[in-house]
Length: 118
Image (tube, rainbow, N blue to C red; front, top):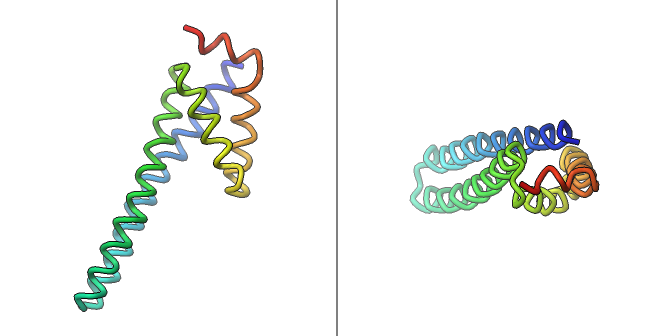
């Protein structure tokens, strides 16, 4: 099961890194659209939208990345965090669902418990 925990850790870390990259792209594209129009109201509205979308993606990406790194280091809190994230990602079909099911299977298996009791 140690291998499965490491695979899950890498998958969560990769998802987190991709979310952070997506946040950067979203902020640049949303903010850029408002700047192109040149109107004050459009610039303000797109700035607020970019901050909201970017903030959410940065937060979720950071949490995913932290969970992945914690799993790779076999931290007990990472097992709980990854299980919560797995449940939340079950609705994100198809990749989130697959990752959620795999993570729940790995984290809830009795053979996994001793790995996190250090």
